[in-house]
Amino acid sequence: MSTRATLSGIFASVSILVVGWQAGAAVVSAQPSTTGTSTTSSAATSTTSTTSGTSSAASPSTSATKKTPKDGTFNGDSVQTPFGNMQVQIVVAGGKITDVKALQVTDYGGRSVQISNYATPILRSEVLKSQSAQVSTVGGGTYTSEGYLNSVQSAIDKAGL
Amino acid sequence: MRPHVFDTMGTVVSLVLPDRPEGRAVEVARVASVFREFDERYSLYRPESELSRISRGELALTDSSEELRSTYVEALHWRDATGGAFTPHRPDGVIDLNGTVKALAMQAAADVLLDSGVENWCLNVGGDVLFAGFQSDGSAWTVGVVDPADRAAVLFAITPTGTRHAVATSGSAERGEHIWLATAIDRTFVQATVVADDIETADVLATAIIAGGPEALAHIVGHWPVDVLTVGRDGSLTATPGLTAALAGA
Image 1 (cartoon, helix red, strand yellow):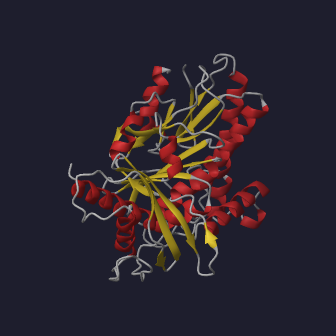
Image 2: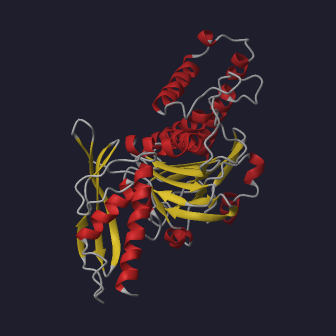
């Protein structure tokens, strides 16, 4: 994979994750202003702004060398949103993003708020491995007494696993 | 090992007791009687239940049992805490406590087991799961969750750790769900699984996420110590870091 493709892959991932993170933090309808990015043009949304911030940190995609992206930890720019400032950190290893963290947000009072829990999009392939685990019980699909007869739980109960 | 299986509250209980599976008849009977008591007091499909008598106007709420009133007050607290995404009121005004009563019965059953000195058990009531201790081989309980697109398949499996003992899943397309909203239900998620320390929190919040959509999800994961996985109408998934970490084999 070329450097450019790898990097754009990274940026796509960041965008998706940032969008998901924002959705998780209820920042969905905003058109926030941007701050302090190395690119001077004002971006339309905080997503693109954060992405451009990341690109400057991770050495820009315009360098058309064949080197893989540097491993390391990179912080995106802090971005203003209606809900306070937000900043994202990525960890790159072997040319791939291995971790994305929301570093912090500050609310309007300037108080720092640690984001420790938010729901982000995940791929079905990420849960695939767990499907083959030996399960003790099966939840979900809230079933009635009749529905139970055709449920996975019913099969497990009969098998006496 | 064959679980103890019995009908209650219009659904089915599966109780796994790995230690001395044959010798727990007393405890199983006590657990069954706990569910029977809740069923007889709160089920609206039983015309003679206390809650049915209230719904028909035969019994004033102010004259009802202290247990019923405290259950109702607790459900109202959940309504306020979730901004109305969870509510114990049907659109026609009838008080429906099914959204919390199953979980309360599960917790009462858990108390019976723990008070009886039973340390290892796994209780599944209509797809909501509460457990303690370990399986017979000493390994952690692993909970599968069905795929809403294929009820015969497991979408994912988790091995909750630490204080997480409750796994509740709510869906929008199921009979037997009790998601009452004054406004239209949000259509974003078809299934939400919430892993929490206790089953009432897990159950109520799973319902609230289905009813309230992404806005409720964002509020909930920011305010309660829970792990969540949602399945969207388009099949897309979202998960909190804690849930991803708890995926079996992760």
